[in-house]
Image (cartoon, rainbow, N blue to C red; front, top):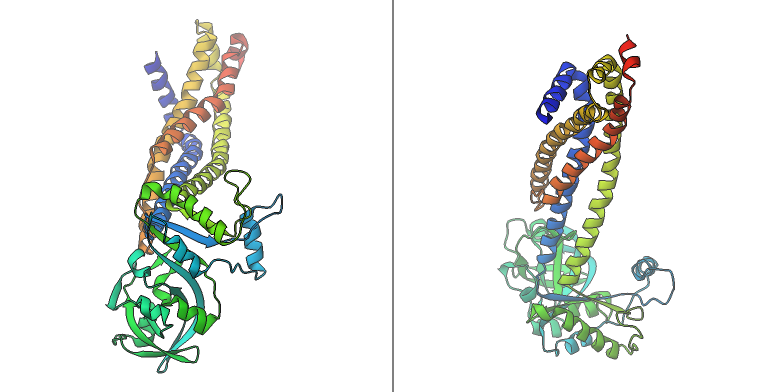
Length: 423
């Protein structure tokens, strides 16, 4: 019986191909969008995860933040608002980093601050980001030296006028010439180039090739005139103890900054710092990308509803065109359920065919997106998660049944005598 129903439904669809095509098109677009959204979400998550892991998976980050005592305001929103107004947090210092280094699970650390200066060499000049870090930066970060060397700890402590150029800065100032040992002018002083970084590209929105690396104390004292730092990165011996170590860092910094212990566990409102592990960062990323994916999916559902309404309208037209057929079937003994199942099968079959075509089309478009993204230098992996196929299949069946049910019910409830009289 079901084979005959499917055969009859296909024959009906084939009898008016243009109408069938327009009906299926709405479902194809909707289902393809589902596949594209899930694929793009997975690709974006992999891209950002890869950029996070470029910093290393065995690290703990400490950054300054604004303490919050205001109710009803997010701490991050308040911090951003204060930063926009020029408020600076100056409590995190290099002395704090030295104390954190005494913790048993801390292997190595570096602190960071930034500035901006115009660098001159001969007739060439370039405005670049000055990235002040400790000498241990090169041992923790994924960056590599291509020519020369990185500056030493002694050079950092003695406020030496030495710098390491990013590949783009070196290209602009020296072109194909050797930059190591050359002198550049910056902030009315001369600085000696001791190394050039290997080309790295952009990571987390920062182009490291456009950075000039300088000893942090040199940048603090000779150029920007500050004593604090913006953040610090700490390498761990045991990654499995990252959360425990993060708690130890919080307790230590509260003592160093005279911050009273929180009255409730997990309350960090009075802290003027934030401690984040890579595990926490990945979890936050997963939450954000997941929320974005489902939000986009809700928008895509609107196009599926439009496609479903199209199916309902077409099914009404089909029922109207086949009124005499319905009357004849009922007259020779067809039951109400038989008529209903017949038209419901046609509706579901339309959405299934549209779903299959939509899945194929969505995969093709997702693959093209990955090719284009990689062409522009993004490490975008082509991924279509299993849940994309599951959701696409469920949506196809759901909209086929929901929007085909009422027309099928209308056909099934027709009076056979009235149906046979219809011309």
